Length: 241
Image (cartoon, rainbow, N blue to C red; front, side, top):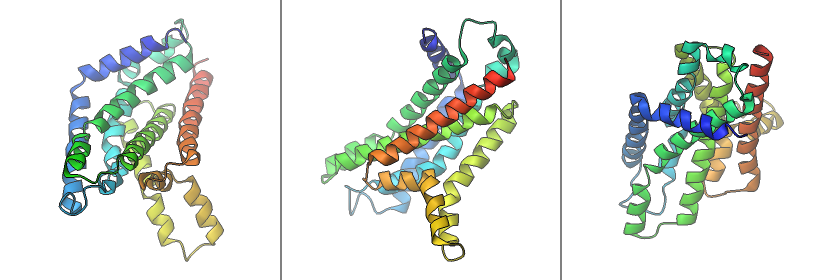
């Protein structure tokens, strides 16, 4: 674990030097605010309810998370770092977890750039800061779960463009799963729908986004993150041992 901070700082520096990082964060922040204000009467009627802004995040993350995931592997894919990794004094877990934490921090920074909405809500009065805090936390957990999936996709495909397309496609399927299940509600057994809903990140996110910040839903996202990071580590160890 000694070299994990080194990998973390190196990846953060890479994000800081890449213009695409700033562009994707700017697009995410602007669209989150602009679309939220366009789709909601906030703040004219109810400044305490910011749910509409967070409901857009699963879709807006399609761009932000895909860009961050693709940048995670740009240097390594070009320089053949994976083939040389086994000669370096670093474990695969340190490498994977350090890079993931850096990407997750960058996603958190993009999320925090929407914080002026919270200041506005408090200025107008009636803001439920406890609910808003849970919404920010749930959105960050969702971003982490999406990133972990993008991480694992890399073990299946090395090309950066293909990685970006596959990540967007998979995130789109995950985000739209709940709507598909609603359409199939009367076509398949109820127990089957309930089982699939319980596995959907979007349904879990919607529950926390409503202010129901439960330990069960939080553990679901953490378990999903750890599971995909573990799968990434095991796959890389197998392929490059």
